[in-house]
Length: 63
Length: 369
Image 1: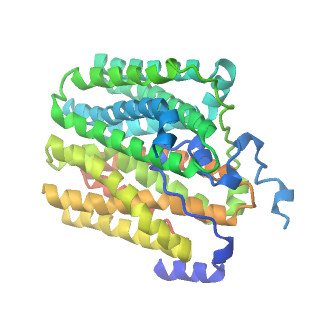
Image 2: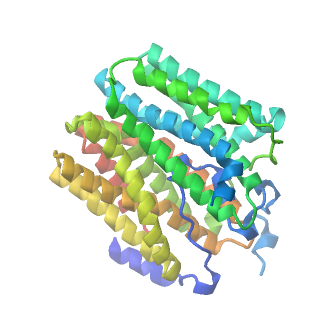
């Protein structure tokens, strides 16, 4: 299982440091809600979810 | 600090009262249920009921708030939470407790969403991080205090059900007396599994397993502690220590995950959780100290996994979609939370107290990047 995990990881590159967001310390997920995610978001993301583009929108996947 | 705290102090106070009541409610049910001879499967179903209610609350409370407003909805949530704990005091039967627990899960999700929406509205870009940190701290302290409170009285009677109801009702006072305008509409979440999967299959699979593991432990830790013979104070500590250890461990784990491949940090956390699982199963500890130390290690590992997974998924998400991704993962976590306590309850019925960790070890072993 460990070998399989390492093999799988080797097949997909890690995210470059420059593209990583910050880790957010938070409540245990059983006590979290979608509003917790909104409150914990960084300044650039802090807008109502209802206004956010859906990740399924293919235009969002374009560079 | 004080100038950040004053405008939100009433909200934080209301939230603390709510979490204190929730802490009592989450422990008095398994403790009293065990004393009444409820099966582990039934006690696990309490967690399943809670998770179903919680997920439905996250999905439907925003519509209710849109229809009648924040303050009225918050009052309704607190009132129903109080009613639910009182019904559980009046009808001490498994068939009654499980659906009523779903109602309290719905109310808890709704009330938490409203408080957080309010805080979100009050937060300025420069104070958002501070407000979230204070809110998290207040909630952890209140939850732990509620859990520890049950070691201070008689758990075989009406006392803690009544105390829980009192605090649920008190929680609505600060917001009911508020003269401030209602904030913006609540965050709505869409569970778009195919999109989440395309974004990060690792995150979707892992967060489901974490949902199984964390909800199983959160629901049945007290039942495990009771059945291995820990006293009431140790039982309360067995439920509280992992949550606090998880809060503390997020600081170094988050630091590490921001500086190296998050998948390696996730594997390290899973290996730590597996070690604790194995120790619980093979050593079958009966003493207070061994159980609390292992519970601390277990909590430090399992409660840090969810934020690592969310951070990993957000690393892969298109710009501007992180809240959508986090909200979707939370719903997948909720689905795991529905299944986990049920499986663990059945396992404990078949294999005894260690059945809890036979469930969590399967979840941790199958969670690999």
